[in-house]
Image 1 (cartoon, rainbow, N blue to C red):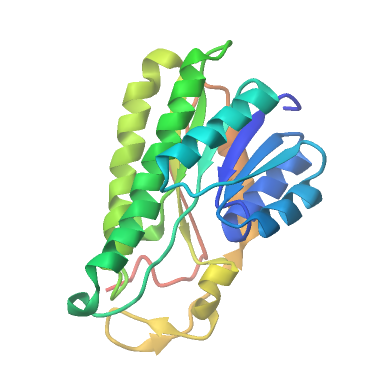
Image 2: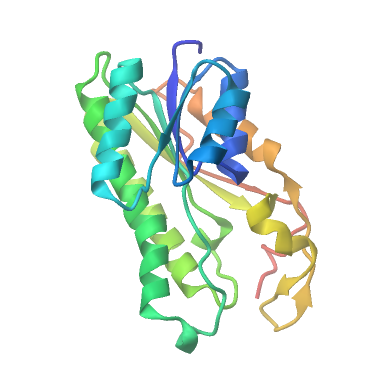
Length: 247
């Protein structure tokens, strides 16, 4: 896999960082995208010489265009987009969610994912050999919501539709698209899980978590399949988290 090139968004921390380092450890060259330069540079240094940090706001079409232009200029092609950048947004009662907060979650989780997929499609279609793979970071919330999470849940359900459309539209160009739905990976973003989060019955309860490295290994497995094979949807979760029994 030493000649494979991956673009990872939200690469400065959490799942994105873990996936980037897992790929780097197995010979992938990396284009690391995220809003903050300092964490990206730190991940790039840890990943080694085959990593390029490109500070990027994925909600900005011009910034996304610049990201894929930099990838093409530096590496000549890309083989994988891990479409990972996202945010929970505020956990508040529905009637208290502001339109600005709603739009911020939609812009990052959905529009940002679309823009990056569009950029990857354009490059994957014109490169030689043609094709590549896109893996979208969905969520357990792409299936079942948490209380007070309407913006996050709506966008993650929409990411599933994005994944299906990308899969269909990519067929003529050898572009495969799959989705990983993650439940309670231990990162800074999910730190509250261990101390207590609201349940469907109104209780506040701690939830089990899993090592984010297990997520990263799953993404790498999906990424390293030949383009003739695709993991369309994968669900990776802490074994005893209250997902199956949620609600």
